[in-house]
Amino acid sequence: MAETPPAMIGPNAILQMVPVLDQLGGLKLRTEILARAGVFELPSGDEMIPEGPAARLHQEVRRTLPDMAPALAWAAGRATADYILEHRIPARAQWLLKRLPAPMAAWVLARSIRNHAWTFAGSGQFHLVSKYCFEIEDNPVVRGEVADHPLCDWHAAVFARLFQVLVHPDFVCEEVECTALNGRACRFELRRLDGRPKQRRV
Image (cartoon, rainbow, N blue to C red):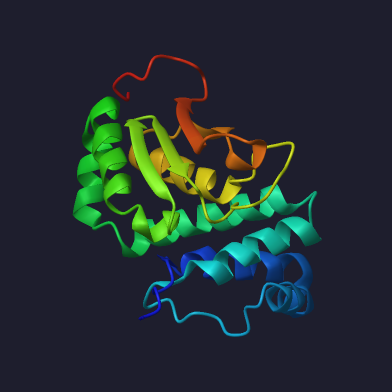
């Protein structure tokens, strides 16, 4: 019987964490954490990678640096979004999104995120609840973990940065439910920081 191929995820789940670790503790810290996560060779960035090593890296960062892990994951997520903006979303599409009314731009971006969920959700199941709310069931990046706070800062940072650049700079993203907190899914909600209704940009 043929083996089931491993679930895949985008290489930025690993690649954007590496410079964050380098900035914090140099090559020594990066090498130690990657080795404990079982990552002995960095992906090329040209193709999808098995989700297991990426998930282990994020989990190892949380184990090794529990106090700093949220900020590190957020920095890596922001860098991932910047990579997407530079290399994956055509400049013409970005130009158009920035000129649409914010609610319409949010719908277009949310659907695009759903259509490319396989790049960041791996074997998890992505659900577009609304243009401002996403869920990932069985999120592999936190699978099996137990915590007293939400853990998916990398995903939240990616969503926040994309909305800030393409919809409105006031957007923030909060993980309001996490499977590490015995949640049914990892649930992300986007909102304007100032709490105003999500109206057309000025």
